[in-house]
Image (tube, rainbow, N blue to C red; front, top):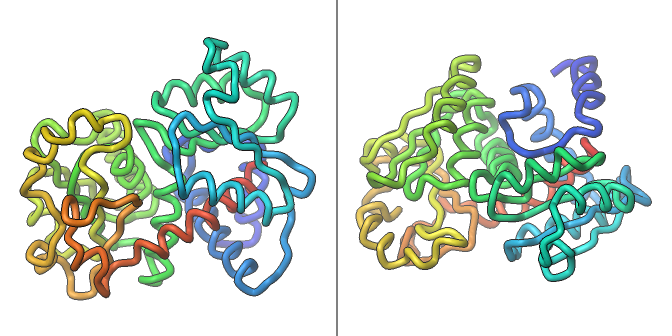
Length: 318
C-alpha cells in the first residue's frame, strides 16, 4: 500500500463509526490490520505512542465480558487516554431513557463510545444520534472487533491472507457474520457448516457474496462439517449457545452433536491448519481438548490481538 494511499485512508477514517466491516472498503480493513500490527510492535518494543492523550472512551456494557472490557480499557490507557466502564445499571437507559438521549449527552462528555449489547439496532440508533465515533463491541448480529483481530492473527501466522481458506463449523451467529464479511473484504475464502435451522442470516450472506465478487473471495454455506473443513488453512468455531441463548442449551447440544471440532474432523484440513476460537470455550462441547489445547491452536494469540486491533480502531477513528 503506497504512502499516499495510506495517508488518504488515515484521513478518511477520522470521526467514522466502527459498526461493521461492511462499512469499510477492502483497503480500509487491511489498513486497520496493518495498523494493529504496528501498534503491537510499538507496545512490545516499549515505544510510547499516545495519540489519544487527554481523550476519554465511554464503554457501555449491556452484555458482560472479559476480553472486551480489559482490552478496551488497557488499550485506551496505552494510547494515553481514559476509559469509563458503564453498565446498564450505571446509566439511565436501565430506567427507560431513549438511547438517542444517552448518545447526545455522552457526546458532550466523551470522545468516543464503545457499546457491547444485544440488539444491533441499539448500536445503529446510538451512532445515528451521537456526534462522536461509536464502536460496536458486539451485538447479536455482529462482532467486527473480534473478526479484525482474528484476521490480524492469521496474517501474523501465515504471512498472507488472500487465497487462504477459512472453515467455520457451528452456530451461524454474530461471529460467523463478521468472519464472512471480513473474508470477503480481504480476498479470503470461507466455508461455513451449520445444522439446518442455524444458518447465518440470509442478508449477511448476500452482502458477503456481493463484496466477495470484488475481491475474488468465495463464500460457501453448507451443512456438512467435512465439506467445510476440507483443505482449510484455518478452522474456527464458537460456543453452541451464545450469550442470550442459554435457555436453548440442551436443544442446541442435540442439534450440534455432529459439529464438534475434534481430531477426527481435523484430518480433512490442511496439515498446517490453524485452530481459532473467540472464547470463552466449552472444552468437550464445541471443541475437543486435544484440538483447542493442541499445537495448531492459536486462541491466546487471538485473545491478545483484541488489544492491538482495538487500539488501531480507536486511534484511527478517535
